[in-house]
Each structure stands twice: as C-alpha cells, then as structure tokens.
Image (cartoon, rainbow, N blue to C red; front, side, top):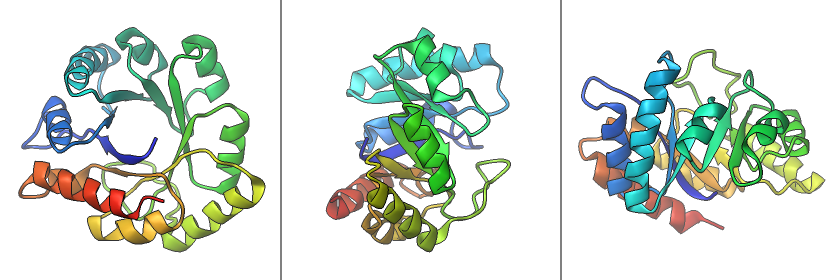
Length: 210
C-alpha cells in the first residue's frame, strides 16, 4: 500500500459514508472503515454500503478490527489493532485473498507482525490525536526515523503507514523516513474544502514518494 489511507470518522457535519465519498472524490484509493463504539450489525451494514461506493471509484476498502465483517462484505482487507486478533488467526479465517494490516508502536511490534504474516503496518501515533482512545506513546519524527532505520537494517520491507495526528505540512519529513503511506482523517474533514484538501495531500505524498 502506498499514497494516502483515509480513515473514516463521523463528525457533526459528516456521516461515515459522507466521509467515504469525500476521500474518494479527492482521489483517494484506500479507505479504512473505522467505527468505534458502534454495534457489529451497524458496522456491517455500513461496510456493505461503503464497499459498493468504493467499487464505483475503483478503490479498496479495509475494515478496522472486525475480521468477520471484512469477509462478509468482501472488503479488500482488515486492519488489526494491538488488542485485536493476531494476523495468523485472521489469515486462517480470511485465506490468502485478503490484505491484513496491523498496528505498531515500536520496532518490536513490527518484527512480530512481520513474523505473523501481516501485509502492512500502521505505525503511530505521530503526535496526539483525539480520534483514537487508549493512545500509545507518541513517536514524533525521531521515533519514525529510528524505527524505519531498524527495519532497513533487519531487512523488513513491509509497507509502513504513518498515522496519528498528522498534518499536511508533516508529510515531506515523514515520507523522508521511508514510510510508504500516510493515514489521515481529521486534517481532511476539518478543512474548508475537504475534497480539495484530499487532492492536495495526495499530490504532496506523490511528490515525496520514493
């Protein structure tokens, strides 16, 4: 995975599906459906709708946390948090045709996830973010530099997505650490022109993509 991963987030202004449309209209091709504190039945209903919308844009949908919903909705993949099912167990349920990502906060997390067969890593948080509860220690730019260097030294080549409180002007320095993609939510949805902001962010990421 490379480029921009958009994380859905319901606001007073936008529903979850509204935010999917915004990202897709802005040219994003990777959407993660994250719906915290919502019943699985409601998540699955929204996932089915989001999958249909993504299909129309040629984009991939990833489901946060819920392996069964990922399978039932025929999403492209699932993203597993540190307290969720291990990738090895998810692979037994999903089979080879699905993408499995995992959350990491340290090099040791990445090493473990790589051994467990994860397809990509969500590494963060970059800085404090209000969209995520039970936040892991903040990494900052130095944390990314250190962890990405260790990955290179040990030959771990998994795509790494930077996530957590990232602003547009953080992108050049973050991309320089060697990450493959940037995950965003609030910085897009709080913009005056969210679709235009998405386009601008994708252009910036592409400019600094190695």
